[in-house]
Amino acid sequence: MKKVGNSSDKQKSRRKKLETPILVTRIKGESRGKTFFGYARNISEGGMFIQTLNPRKVNEQFYIEFILPGEAEPIRGTIEVVWQRQLLSRKSYEPGMGVRFIHIKEDRSGEINKWVESRLEEEQLCLGGAISYA
Image (cartoon, rainbow, N blue to C red; front, top):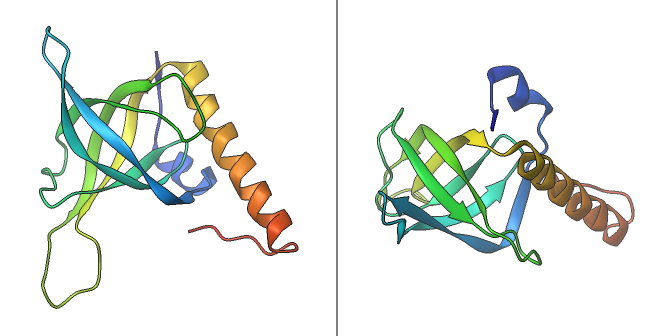
């Protein structure tokens, strides 16, 4: 397992805003039962934003699973909540939480980065050179 997501990684990681959110499930206990955790709205090699009406507390850690669009195998790992945003009726922001990946198998972490990079390259080609780092 590779420990990922330190402060210098934040500046290096390119982030991909997702057109279709990724379902994120929490894996609980020895039974490995899965429960709905939220929808990832953007992702990078270092972490993701999970949209949820019930954001967790900063510093809480969870074992989660998600599948990148177009991929077959799930990615599993431990995340840590680094910030959260509650639902506020007067704000247009989505409620949820920013999480960083704590432990993900090294090859899977690289797979996330390759997936993000390939989607950003596709966008650049479609937009004639302009690229968005949402």
